[in-house]
Length: 179
Image (cartoon, rainbow, N blue to C red; front, side):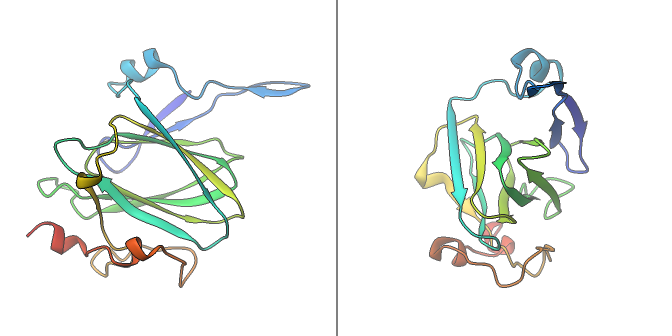
């Protein structure tokens, strides 16, 4: 695996280093020793899978609040997504900054996302599946989110007028979270 730091503190891109032969390829997607060597979390008590049916559908931007913020490993196993992370840590020098990544089944790329980042994605291909490993169990009372179209963030989503769940459509703006 190849680990690359991003512009956002604590966020890493993890690329596969496949070994190929006539059958296809083999690649490790996770190794506790390699994660620990990079100072990254190596404990994943929960794993989730989402399937998004149509291009343009948007999920997010979600995060889990203190005292159980989630560290996430995010990988698009099938299809393609435009993945977005937003720093929602009020005391961070990069508070309110976002960065986007294209994750596809073909590129095999994984994102390591520390706690304190909101995460969302827009589906780019039919029947896209996203695989998440989580450092924490889900606590419904700590589930939070911010609006996908918050004008202070000005996130550049690839497809206009996305389909959103009623919950995601009603999420607050970032400034409402830090009152």
